[in-house]
Length: 464
Image (cartoon, rainbow, N blue to C red; front, side):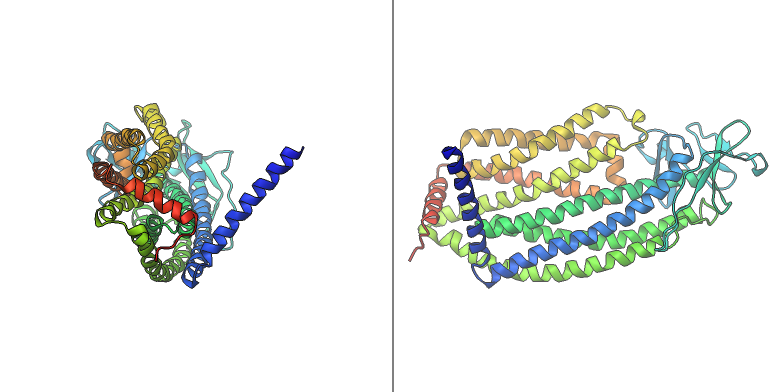
């Protein structure tokens, strides 16, 4: 009983000491305090904005998905190329393996370029089951939809509550729209996780007075701002393609989305404004803290110029590790979710192998980052060897996947996934090169220098 009580008190004492340390680091000076407050506010506000965006995309996605499911569409892929929509029975290797979706009284061409003709309206019969939606008050429309069959039982369209019939070419275009909205939701989830991750970087920056985390956090804010601006511009392009290719091109001017696009844009503009303001504030604070932390890092216990140069490479490697850790996990997670959500998984070859490869990469990511961080700072050859083996494996898997038709098709059609994947790959290569450079400097005194520095920090030693 006494032992349990002692353990409990010890845990509370340790927790309290950590809280006191965090408070002391946050209130070290006015810049650390403002930096902490700005990071927390940035995370809360942008997370709230991201929640609104996810809600917008979910409502529209559920509407389109309900119509797609109710229309019994042929399995396959609908892609957009050269301002036109194409149907691909299998994973699209090139645009020549797909056929255009054409308007009028026909749906789309099959693999043999043979037209499938829609039965005339006098033969249409309403199906008994309906896909029900609900009408919202925020401007965009959700509709009840009823599948329509011909005399042979083939689905030839969907009848909306208004009586308008969406022909099969229109419904096939909804496959493209549905994929676009599902991808947007994945982007929202990743961006929300990105905000939380950036807050954690800021907290570690203050707690450890860490230059790598400070630089990684600032770089992340720059990337986040750039991507937010791109999403606004890309949303306008998506709306333009939707109205030209879907509404006017294939759906006889029936617009099921109402003014949803305008609402979406109105919700994204404040995000850009806040991003720019937050970036300006954090850029100033980060620059100030960088000067303070760099003086502490390079000025303690009289480090030699050689040690300082080696330490700069270690810091660059640490920054790459922090960034690639998130971007690699984000890219892998989006890809796995994309594969698992495919309605046409039966046409994807080697699917289990792709899933196994990505899941293995996911499992290895966190241990890999920790090994990289520890091995170069401690100059531990065994840990470094394991780290390089994992680096080679992850880089090899990332390179190999570009040989996949499905991966390339996703890469070409999804800008966010392509951006995250390219960023991850570039950071992986940079990480690999920097790790080799750091290994070449093992045994030159960095490990001893860092050990002495940590010891002196533990006793609050400050050099004269």
